[in-house]
Image 1 (cartoon, rainbow, N blue to C red):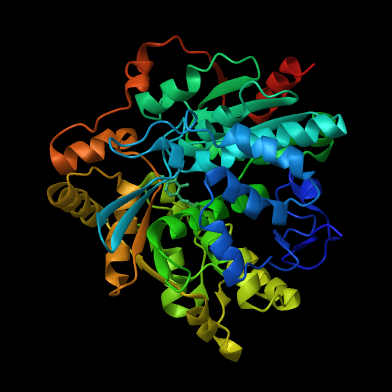
Image 2 (image 1 turned 90 degrees about the horizontal axis):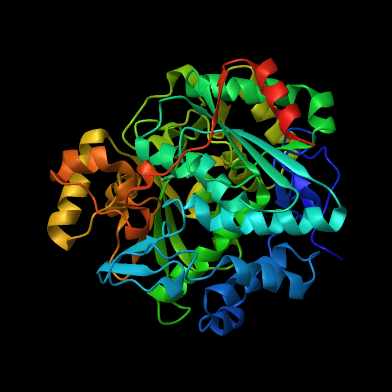
Length: 478
Ligand SMILES: *Cc1c(COP(=O)(O)O)cnc(C)c1O
């Protein structure tokens, strides 16, 4: 029988991988998790050590996506994880590794997750999702119109993953004039007929409100097959588990060794995949959750109380992709921490929905966090600048501000004999203002992306009005 996915809140029917692939939230408002995690024994791990990225991807994903025929899954994986699709590697790194591990010192490594088309780690999962979506839609004869709002990374990753895919259109809202010239060029220069960039006369929150208004209209949603690709999608988490395995084998010689990972975190999606890799038997000692000034996660791991803040309290920082007030994927980890007690989770999330906090301290629940290896820390703008500078001075390597948060916090948790692997979640070229502030020079840009600001751009401009968005979608959907 195929693996069953259940909701963290326990009130939705169990379903298979393909059945939940196109979904965000479960009908009861929870997030999907496999009923239980697949497990690799030491002998399995030993057999995986010699595998390349695509083989590892199959070994991991075939356990999760077991209702997709093996041959089809293999083809989707092979089509996704090609060296020429993740080609923007640092000089000296090998693109055939897909996620090359760069040694800074014998016990400090950088895992290159940002060599895909949009120079951020979201490509790692999104590129696979594009191919998976196309496959599932084709088999069921359905179409999908993805509507989203972006202030940068997510929107471009979604567009580069879905461009040219049959049965899929992307309507991506972004605040007019608010993104960097590079980010704008990345998105607006796409000429694919199924990609619709919409510059909204407003700020990011206006874009998000328009998407929410549209999602609230069940009739419209159903009639126009509206979907999303947000960070709570299970397929994205599953795809992110793969590179934890790849990094582990790159950094170790045998399965008795442990490693730690430092993860720049916002919505808790990336580090949640690390937690799942550990639950599957990967010898991970610590998962270091690194935040910026928006420290809702660091607060939880230091106090046992999860206290999401109102969106208006989100601070704008120089690691903008981690500027969140509520970590949507945290609910998945919470479910494991509560021993999958969905009634208790519902009660805690009810507190949150009433504007309160979820307190995990009673019944020894919070004490169990240590068993899962999760620790945390937060960083500031000054800390980022200092870390970018010392990394450059010491290792002649430029890192982006998000990776700097990971490195700065990770350094507080190094232990002798345990490699610390810092996840590089974006390339410095995307954040040249901060790099110039830190180093007095511009980061190099991959040659193929030189001059993209001069390419012709294709986008529509709309006022911040959900009605106009509906009209626009209606006119552009057959
Ligand atoms: C999205 C993003 C993050 C945060 O990842 P989560 O999975 O949301 O925790 C960190 N850094 C960069 C560059 C990102 O784009």
